Length: 304
Image 1: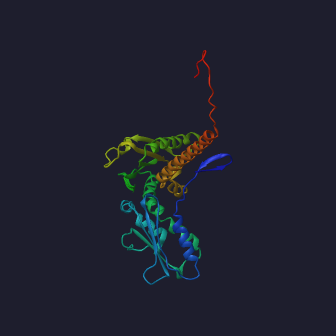
Image 2: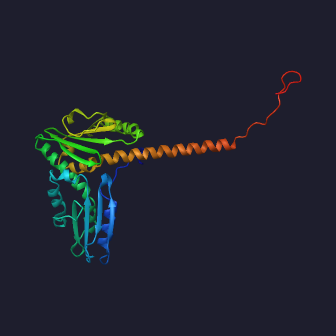
């Protein structure tokens, strides 16, 4: 889970788009003639996708998504953002059991089909972006939010966002299901916290275990316990400005996924090293030969 550049180890960043959606739509958009499609895909945070055709119409492709956080995002302008990003492709009424549906007519696709496929694969990211854009604009106007946005982005976990005249505070709650994850997670989060010492432009990062930070006092449904962590990002105007906000959203919206992905990679690496070392020990034991038993005499006429 690292790559090497200029003798430095850099942690891998996950793609903000869904690769399955992107590659599937690219193939269907570039096909010589319309083809039937019926593919189900999943994404991090429990997001589910469906790519299909309407009955008896291969010339139309429908991309539908279902996500647990969508209801929380409605109050923060997610429909307006999706309309801005996808225009006429956004359907007023999504498919049954889904939260949002995009419709693509293969007979009237734009010239840059790959860019369209990429934008469609950013559907989850663009939905999540609505709440961040709203609060970033509040900070840009130097106004404080009257209430904290709460988005239940993952099972039992939430993100809390509030705007202030000089900053935006983003707090993630995260649940560690394995005690080992708590230990490894602390190491990663300490690295985030210490990064600001070397990179002054980085956001301030704070983290705590067991108890929620004081900024969340009064919020209902807060998790508590030894396996509960709270990670706070303090974003300053340089992070929320119009020139940088897209990159900030790309990075911060998948922080939970990024953290748990690298925890799992670290555990897999440790296990592989343990297996490798165990294999070496076994080889040493197999090569070992016990010394031949010899008789030793102790005193006259006595052998042991």
